[in-house]
Length: 244
Image 1: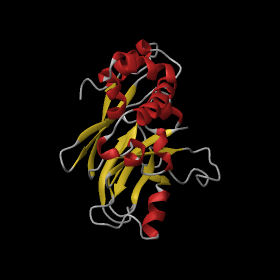
Image 2: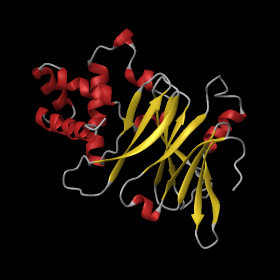
Image 3: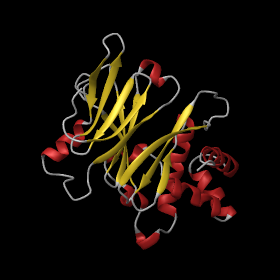
């Protein structure tokens, strides 16, 4: 396989290979041992189109790293294989859906699922095994650690659907109920695209733990649950990042 320009990152998960090209975003490949050859599966078409019309051409912009988000059961069938890309000052979560549709052009493009602004050029990604937020599940899960040029370090953590919905509702309430630095709403500050709603802001969510008890109770009631349940959910997320 001949990469188009300049490959700056390459990661492997079983028979899947993802590489980041500094000019042409990322490409997903498949290794077939029978032929001993790499076959291209999908590309980050959105990044190609943005660059084609003149977006993201400022200095320091580009895809400098890419890695897989591995969740139990996904890699075996590749029905929803996740890819994390460091794209300038944001982290993007892409999905490979080989079943094909009009949106992904028959499985030939990686679909954007989430965007998150980190305000630092992300140049390094790495995987790390973490416990799941659901204590009843023993399936494997991996977080993706990212590091920026200014020394910033963070992680994208997998979240079970039930936990995600609860925290998504809490995040919306916290965004409206709390005061924010310079009056900047977190949604507007972090917003990179319409896909930003598919990812949670951990810094905002954990502000809940330092709030007065009566306010915690009122906010929990606003999302249809109680204070103890919210705190237990946040503790399960904190346990995932205890190694960081």
